[in-house]
Image (cartoon, rainbow, N blue to C red; front, side, top):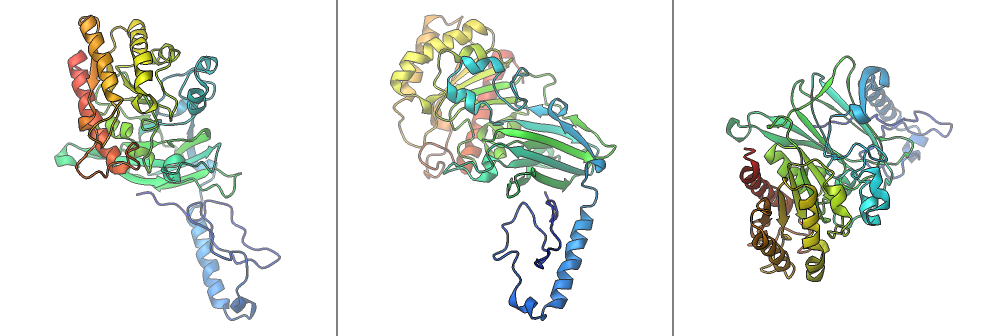
Length: 413
């Protein structure tokens, strides 16, 4: 589990006004009345307690001695074992579209393309400790259904070789939130680690990253952790706010992250809240991502009329640009018995398959009936966006369907 030192931020030990020296963290709210002397102290009745606080303070600070740069081997930008990024020619390092998309794609796609949605570090290290420092552009983002632990927090997962009857599984180790009280300092997380144990660090769902670095003990290294299929091309998943992480409470619970762990394959998230509508300008850039499978998942941003207008031309362009790469067209998840838009997607799919079965042999379909549990009506926040319960269920369902498609298309398993 992650343990964060109580002295990661600068501490003012004394001041002319006689402030009580208390450890400050970027995890906990400041105590009520912090910085004011209590009446007992003014009367000299609490000298022993003050001394105890001082001893505890300096002991805590001593515990994190060595958090300076000299104690760490740092990895940044191109040196990071970064997954979930499809393009190298981006305007800044942590962006999801290439720089050329700026003048061609709708503004919403460009703006949200700066989010680190779906990006992750996947590695092993011979270090017994790991430190992460990161800073986001908007330290106070807001979404009524996603807490800060998801919007701007990091998730850490570790491989448990004994899990699942000895088959092994990724297990959640902790979430690190970013508390930007002092905006001059980045968010920080430091935790112990078992050398050689594989690790995944998920980046925030809805943050624009200003800076990010990960450190291991001096003299130690980080190496990318391989996937089950060496040199596998990523699954590229284009879609709505649900794909964009809405509304998981933390990054590792986004259904695309769950599916990627189940599949043990590289995965690129191109989800955009309210903005992915199968526009004509998108296939040029989507097809530029070198993929093993394209997942097209735009239902909740579209009306039946938009599907009738946009869907077939979008798929035709994708087929023209990447004729041999399979496409999985998805219905929209729902806990209701009927969705008015899903039949429009099915109509387009059936028409293309009937038009030329050979040409469209690698076009596949995913019905919504297995995406979310419906019996208890508890899988969403608002009958649209899955909660954590729904996200887990969806992730496993998508992994099953994607596995079926990859087997059918190219025998990947």
